Length: 115
View 1: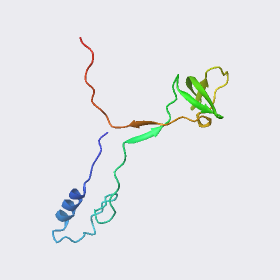
View 2: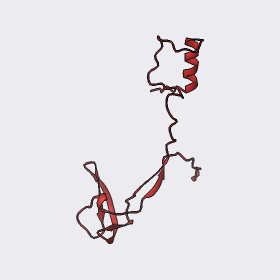
View 3: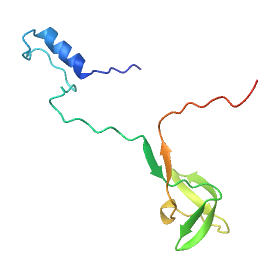
View 4: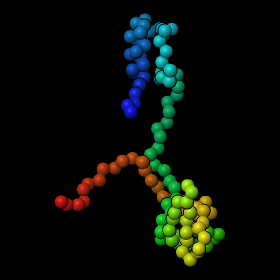
């Protein structure tokens, strides 16, 4: 599927081509396309975010006690955390863990294997 990117310059060129005087032509409608004067600039979206990362061996706080994560599973679209020495799973919202920082920016990595 192809995407169409319309920049403000493209809109200005299309409007100028439709009416050389610069006035808006009533017959041309460009829905979803805003000119730079119509809206305030949008702040750039951050590519960094934070969230707790539950994995085996991580220490978490449960009811003021320090516990260690045994393993994590997804059950019926919910994450369940199993702690060392406990039979029953614990929901992640009942545990406290310092969030880890992630990025959504793709980073190039060198090859570290040989043929």
